[in-house]
Image (cartoon, rainbow over all chains, first blue to last red; front, side):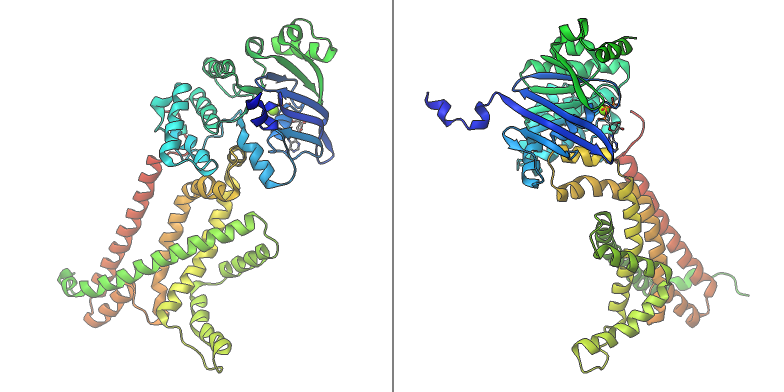
Length: 256
Length: 231
Ligand SMILES: Nc1ncnc2c1ncn2[C@@H]1O[C@H](COP(=O)(O)OP(=O)(O)OP(=O)(O)O)[C@@H](O)[C@H]1O
Ligand SMILES: [Mg+2]
């Protein structure tokens, strides 16, 4: 098959992220202890676990916002080392959405979305603007494009943050508790956006305790505790019949 | 005691105006040099650049602990001597009062602006740096497009008040026999004997310029809200 030979190796591989024997320490404290995780293309993973279990640390290692101390991380065929070229190569393929949005307060909504495509991807200003407007439309916030982040509600800001990440056309999106800083009435608009993204085939790793979202979207729920992955299952199995005592205890807590 | 007579202003105005222009030019030049150099100084400390950060810190500590007037003297008398030893036969090479003023004020203000920016850099939310990393922005673009614009905006009231002080300090150039606004007024006052009128007018000009500058920043901040309530 002609076209398959022409495809680069990384593109044919069914996996996009491989995490092997990952170790992360903060001083003497081991935040991640021998974590293994493989993310397939188009797969949606929900990461959950008690506070301090290392969920944020794990996804922050995947785009090297935290530097790992042991093990291997390979993203889209590129291993994360200390080389800045590799790191920025990986980061430009990995979108990230933070709990606290982290929009740039001095830039308007559309400028927030245009900055990285222009600086990193080399798009011209009109190209970047067009792409930004397309994605702002997709998250249904294009009418606010010229406002500043402080003029938007939390839910709107988080949707802008999602659009900003999508403007880099990432191959995978990481979400770190994207709805836990929001007022309850704004959670749904952000989750709807994420569901839509999932339906379009985006590869996603989400740290969230939104069980409805996990049930609807996740292919796999990964449960962490004390720096290790304790249990993995499809959402139905995980929520109905968790195998470990620790997962049972955790689920009891978030339901009540 | 005569009553106030502002009619002499008509004659005095051209000379006062040239003094004012000098004050403004010196302020502008010192502002630009001071901000550029001060930003570099702040970044060197922020990145903990080995050796250079220590030198910069020592320089700032030194400049901030001596009066500006002393620095002016140093530059005026010492720099020509140093230049003479470096490039000549040991005879002082004069650099002129105007150059002395511009260079000294720039270097002096750099120490103050750099402290303002250094504190501002520390105040930027960690999440801003992380967002830049996640978007694969280079360090240069991170600071140029995201971090420094925020620092400058947040620090703008302090930068402005420092600049107003700078504007008032330009009157110290009288020690170099240069004529700024205040210098022009006092020379005229001695000639025409109208001390009260001259010093009143000068005070009004300083007041007008300083309050106009404050108004500017206030309206800038309204236009570009950094934080605040949802609207
Ligand atoms: N920069 C840091 N310095 C020191 N310790 C840290 C740092 N970041 C995280 N830790 C520690 O590492 C552990 C894991 O933190 P992490 O933020 O990954 O947990 P989490 O599962 O995301 O928790 P949460 O649900 O509260 O967000 C915690 O004990 C935390 O205190
Ligand atoms: Mg966390």
